[in-house]
Length: 354
Image 1 (cartoon, rainbow, N blue to C red):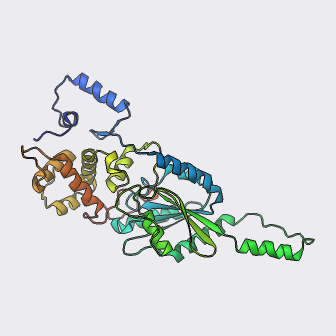
Image 2: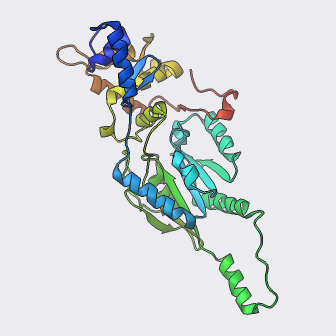
Image 3: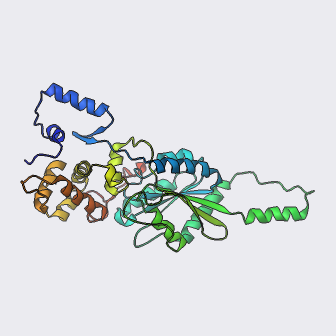
């Protein structure tokens, strides 16, 4: 078997050890305690963390802006709605109504996307809609849902009492101002979730740069949707510490983590194991393999030899084969694939895994 690039990984995963077992166990424990590694099953992976300065600044600006916002739109990845939702937003919203748009729905399982929409629609002051490459969400739909959320949020609030002694002209002006009040929508999302593409779709012209890489939008911008509604765009942001490292690896697989901030081999090994467990038939079909190896590492080795990702000395070119698997996923070459299910949908039969 060709050796891995990282000897410590090969030793842990294969059982081939160059040191006494008690020292190996102690080394593994120290690595986990260092917070630079996390354990997935029997595999040890580098912990992912990416929170550059512009994200810290953007999160602070959003928190300061929220008081002037009427509705928050959170753009999520339909393949992983939980991993792509910013946990800071829940407290930052301060009870503001929220519209969640499950983007890239064409790359996700439509049955499970429906379950996620139902899940979010059951939450208070929350609506959800999907958007796909071949069926983008329309501006009219977004405004309609935002208006419904506003009515929902205002229901039960005390209605201002008109004083009969007030000047009729002043009362009429106050009513006119209330009727023609300008409303603001804040649109947020993690890097590379497609937020800029949705913004351009809603505006009807290209005002935000788009691309298949994270952190393209660097600052806020305010744009007009119609006479009464304005949209405030923000940079794609993550949060300071990615506590759920399995979710962080799913984000890295999707392209939400900058390539220079992650180890391709680690992400590919994690992803290969996940795909073997959940989507074995997709792997067979994509890579024309009748029999699949039992582990992610063995699968990557087999894929490397099948696709020519081998160095001149015969060793596996781990970075090259890792790029192959990751880019195939990002391009949707495995077909519609959802990696997360909503809590209420666990018992709902929906075809996804093979």
